Length: 260
Ligand SMILES: Nc1ncnc2c1ncn2[C@@H]1O[C@H](COP(=O)(O)OP(=O)(O)OP(=O)(O)O)[C@@H](O)[C@H]1O
Image 1: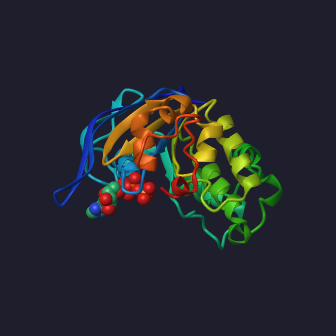
Image 2: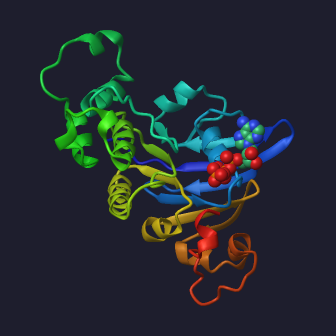
Image 3: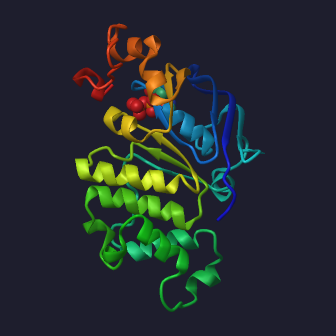
């Protein structure tokens, strides 16, 4: 296992045709954190992750493990140990779970190694299967997996690549209660050895599993801290509820908030 690394973002700025989607963000995610990025639709969460992973051009600085990511290609950033998932799982449905993991594991290998016949399942793949709870389903087609299981397979595909920073975009969207719980426990487990950043709208899930939270609004960091700290922040309540009147629990889960 490689050393734990943190993310250090300074003055990050992303503009689309004159519209500034990320407007001078500073963000520190310490090594091994389980950080939730929350904020209303259009706050800039996905664009921030796009900038970190090289999908959009950005200004400022993004250091991971001390190395500058901005200016590197998407592939070089991936090879730096950074991986992400998207809101819709992107597994190969016609292949088995094992084959999906095998391909992901081979992403960093040469074609010859990929073609060579191997006996058994590589250690890293077996370990990832175990971690994401899909060992029993290894030979099943990925297309037949339940929605939650596809998300876990995607996470497994990042694990076999030995990704050290996982950026997950709404991993529990559409999941059942039990699947959410299992996913939260999986992320807690993974973040013992890796740094995890989760974009999320599900406030119950965030409250149960976040170690730290950053609230984005209109391309800026509005608030940051523990769950209790951001819930108690009147600016956060203002953005989520339109007023600062939720004094008792700082409850962010009102019906109006679920899909904010
Ligand atoms: N490729 C693009 N071209 C133009 N505008 C974009 C592009 N991508 C994002 N935007 C705009 O940037 C803003 C931030 O979008 P982004 O998707 O990052 O927000 P978000 O916080 O992830 O929202 P959501 O929670 O709805 O996913 C939005 O106003 C969006 O319309």
